[in-house]
Length: 535
Image (tube, rainbow, N blue to C red; front, side, top):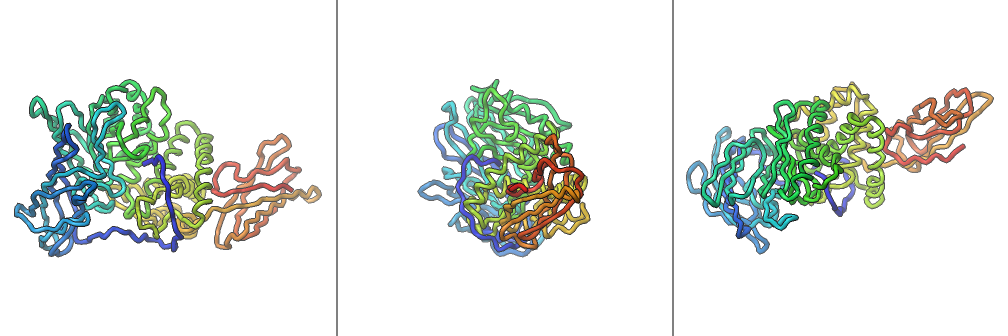
């Protein structure tokens, strides 16, 4: 996803490799499938739901819990009936949890059917769109699905799902997966049924209902691409979202086969700039205009289909495996489409946000396990800085190893979940390098070096000497800084590398003629503030 605005507070990370996830996971249960049946009303915001949940028991259980927001003054859901394997079953519904008194043995399947109704306080955005028409849009990230759907609301428990939506006849409904059924029930209502056969996290299980105009853009291989926009801005929306087809084709060539049954691009009421729902991307309402200015946003959300939706973070603290990847592969797409200059410009454009965030949160690393409010995890650390980490890793191990490693990582963890250690292990195998130092200093430490580079030339000896100073920089930190040597005409004729470590590092190179100057990091490969202070 791309946030619009967020204010965040972070604390010092203890530099642990694995996060301390605040969600109380139950390793005894594994949801296999959700069937969500919902009735929508044009007159009220009350929804009527019936959800069937298929659960595999991985251990013996006497009781277990699901997530569903109970009724409060702000809204919530009231359970009407609850059955397990066809039998009415005792339960307690408090503090957003349904505690269910049902026992079973490891290896057994339980089918839980819950009928409920209420007005969602969050998660399902019910309101009027730009044109004053009532709409319904799921908006679940990070753990807001349970405000309107009974689930295990955690990214690690993936399941297939289906949405069966009964709505006023004038609504078009889009959801995850493929369209199974669209049937008119009467002059007033119809039913729309979508089925997602690929296991996904609840954060990206959604439907949208509005008076859409729908454009079937075309196919990328066997993947249909479509645009769903408000009918009032049909022409602008179709024009703007059509870019998704070429973006999908390009990223598929870079990463691997697209993981879902379709790619729908949807104008919506999401709270974010874009939300990467699986095969069913929601964009903010004002993303539609007569000009194509959201190519980067579309590329970001399409990249999420591989990273975040298919290969997902195992807990929320490792969200950089989603957001950092989507941010960097947006730039990789631009590199493939427009050239290396575009990639370099994109990386430079990220620097002000990284620096501004660093100034306010100097002790915050990318993986910060001290954060307990997961809604505050999004920041330039997990977007822009994490993208830079991937960029530097690419330089460290080389293009061949980097892209092969990324493809292997995706292929290994597609339809599944990973932590940072899993990605590190794959990249070590791909490169033949030990990368613990790299991940420690860039992911688990709040590193953003400030360097001062000075140089002098000894004409008699034909030697160029360079010194790089950095107050307080640890000897354990490794920074390969490229230095471009300018000829008399100002162009860079030679590039040398100095391995910066500690508070002062020097290097000396044979250079035949007096340089016109030196340029730090001319090819934009190192995340650091570097000031060239002259001779």
